[in-house]
Length: 195
Image (tube, rainbow, N blue to C red):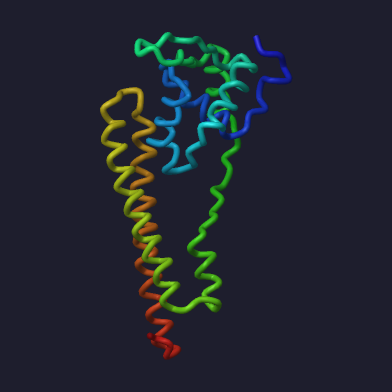
């Protein structure tokens, strides 16, 4: 049993890793990274390997996860796999039910650069928005593909829903970038700065 000092003070990454374990499978750090890349990255972020392994140690120390070594058939190094404990399942369930709903924080690099448009040439601003539109469409297509794969797993019904949200979000980002390109054209025409 974890002592009281280790019961709740987890960073968001810890809750995300514990949440990935809550689907009931025994997973390695590599597996957790793959799963986060196929779901979390579309709406939160995908933790790095070092963050995942750091959180796994923290979760074990808190009694929220356990691990064991599995011998590899290929003769390579043994693999450590992790499983959520009953205490970890209770903790992540309580966190999901009780954590305050934090408003989304928008840190939009392309908009920051556009905000500084007076320091750029119009063509540079267009290029930033074209890259943003391309990035958003790539992310949208990735969310669609991962949602289709997630829908094949009964336990991934809710992650599949978040991937549908991600598809819609990135479609709107793509469309916003396209609209901003039109706005830049209109502004350039108005100011007579069209190249």
